[in-house]
Length: 294
Image 1 (cartoon, rainbow, N blue to C red):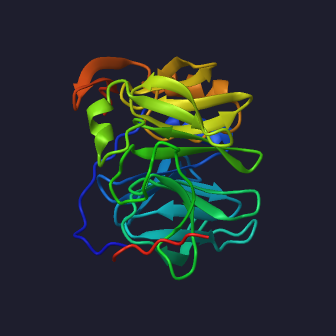
Image 2 (image 1 turned 60 degrees about the horizontal axis):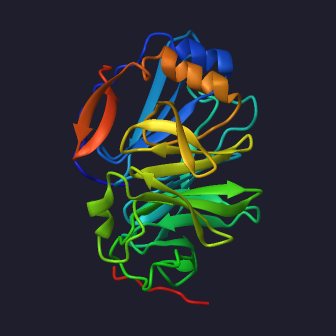
């Protein structure tokens, strides 16, 4: 956890959000590296929102599995475990997540993290443009890299960022370009984004704007076209936008419920604007690396 000076944060929630969370019996967990925080959002026993936050250094990728949260930060991968038994509460909460383990990787700019079918922790190593795993004594162990990446170097060559699993196997990734030079993706943010199929090493979609967070759900590959702010899915090679969405994604339960809720809480009432030269829609709501090669 970071020891940087605590910042005051103002949080505004859309009317009706806590009722929806209560109806669905779900809570939300998300990170924001702009303010270095992990947020847990649920409902108080008497109603209304309950928001808890903890400070970490540049938290990004976040994955929930059973009683654990796995989170990427600037130099480490963290595992937080719920220490409450079923039916037990602590100060009115039914979950109490405690940091129980961390792995120091160095600065890899890790985006997505996930467990595979063998409970191995996998992550997208964005700076080194590869899919990676942990290995004792090393910063990481590379498992796969796009065929157009000719060298593992801390250069963020294509801004590889998102990972989608099918059947517990890594299957799809998103990248902001197919470039092979240091930070080359920055010149292709508008329409250079791609989706790749890992087993075949093929690019299956192009022309995207900074795609992130691919997820396989109910027979479709969903992803976020972050440069436009659109959540949608692939129909063959074509991206089909559905609604506006923030730049992280976890799909569960009924997708229609999730999307209708996004519209209900104002996320669909978007304005047109620009962000770093991109077409962007936004709401007006309130160590040196040591690499292992097998």
